[in-house]
Image (cartoon, rainbow, N blue to C red; front, side):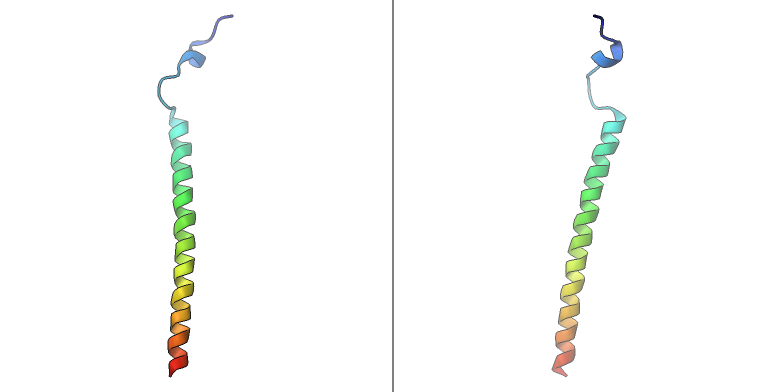
Length: 55
């Protein structure tokens, strides 16, 4: 049984693999930054509420 040259070529990553990897990394960053930002907004809002109640 003869293998095609395409299947035998295993050197390096294909472009689509780099694209998928970059998408996973960027997606993870977006989710992380969004979660961090939501937490930060909630903490700042709580601080503002505390400051308003001091008046």
